[in-house]
Image (cartoon, rainbow, N blue to C red; front, side):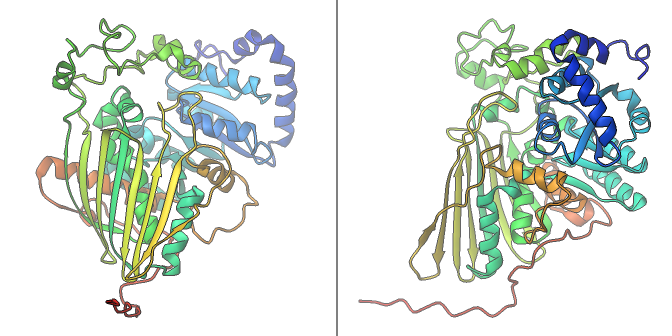
Length: 487
């Protein structure tokens, strides 16, 4: 690497600063070189908190399958942070590149696959450039933020002849896979309607309003950044495609007016310098979390990004209360709501079918995104209620410990392990699923602006159906419900 061209990124300086790990790093570099012909060569673009999951997978359980050879970011301090973490993990430090040197990185490091975890609005740029360079792509959800950007990706996929992988880890949580199996089995017949309520508490929910996510131009708002998970779940649970969206949304809690109703004089710029930090229970101490401090607070000098912005700022332009109606190609109707200032975190969903109803709820123990040490123990309930029959509760299927109900570990094995077994639930998602999920949110955002419903077909061209497992349809025969016995 030409260090003169990148004076802020000195891998040798990082290694020298960690003298105790230098010998290990050198040895691991030699091992990496010897294995480079047999292992997939990965580069990570955007190395904020979400990138850490993929880094740890390649330095740990999947180091035999892949090698993280390079990282790319706009912030040289975060690139140095990754190199230091790699050495602490006993892995070779990846080569560091600034964003302007993306193509150079692909050439010099002979990258096979690019992992994109930049802020959402920039996904499409790196996805398209990687595809055009002949690389495979893994991208964090949401795949992108607008219909035009989705079209760019769909066109690049067609042009390159490749597919991309969108990391919908919610599909992989064992208890959500259990729900999919129930629906596939015809337990409640074919699904005619779905009622879905998702709640964010004032810890996790508030965190979206202090980060870059609070700008719709970057995140697409919660309808895209957060709800893409939820829309993808319903699309996959139903094995169906959304065709029409109607929605309303507003921001009424995270506002300057609400700050004053709470007795504050604010809003102010950020928590760290806030004169009312003692009075505001939404105060967030960025320096108190080692991981967030090392990623963000210690590197503000490079890009001026504040990870602890005031949640009451007037320039926030995303909604905190949203209601959406989605019509599906197969005839099912989804009623969905998202609230970002609730008393608890989690969701409740009900599938109403021709033979009965499935109710599934999860109380999540969610904390501040990217912070250290939050619990992943969720409280889960799944109930089957036959039409005119006795309800029964199912024991939720649980997996190994880990993020997103154990789904992260299962998904990472599916991504990185070439020997992973075939999946009858088809949980792997590509650009078709990525587009189908974000377009519901994009359509909802348009509804917020116009007050009119939106047809998905009017947003992009050439979107094909994803690969989904077979499901009961609206034409199959169903048994007549039993008579109601009266005493």
